Length: 280
Image 1: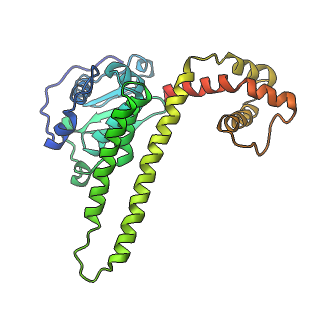
Image 2: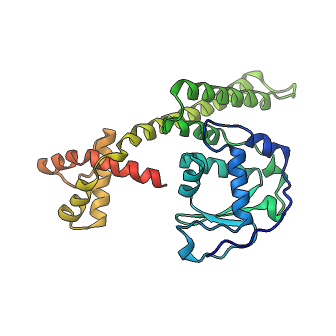
Image 3: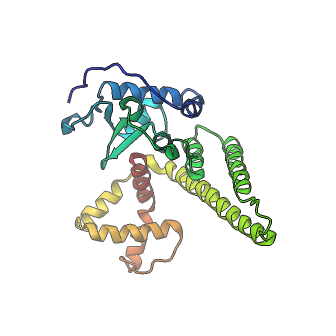
């Protein structure tokens, strides 16, 4: 599919949108530059070169892209691209139609489609903000000290909002119950933040394996498992349990020779997972 002819358009956006887009991060495209790139793609009916054989129909103010394309063009991690698109959708600037390996993006700011005020002015979820920051840590673009400081500020700001929203003006409220409620909510918020950091740490460590050799695992699938997908699923579960140090509940390879074979496949398995993570 060829790019459609560019059309002139007036962009209407809340000041909150440009406030969000204003941050500049290193040598990568800024949020503003990424947003303008989406505008340009939508105006021209852009279709990714990898998707043009699909002949996907586009309406006005749409583009058809992959997360990998955008990550490469903007020099961002895929997780950052996803978080950015999530936020733009929250702000009412885009609408997405997701396919298995691609996404159709409609620039609602160009098409004039209205957005609910509750969506436009919503606050991004803490987990989304944290994962956007942590994505640079995963890829090595930001150091632990910098990321830790930003995560701390985000959590403290969210705790402040939480304390403010729970400060009830009702004189009949029991202070003990209110304090208990706030404490539980704070613990839940901290658990969410710690979970994001722990998940990012797992991704960061896993990412080191992406250049390792995966061919032993492919050979294992073809020769030892005779190309049986269900058998590979069982073996993958065992390998995952081996990596995580948990005890297998139903070993697919119960002999000592089978267990040794699984141990030899640990690194190829991690490499396969790491490479797959890069494509998601």
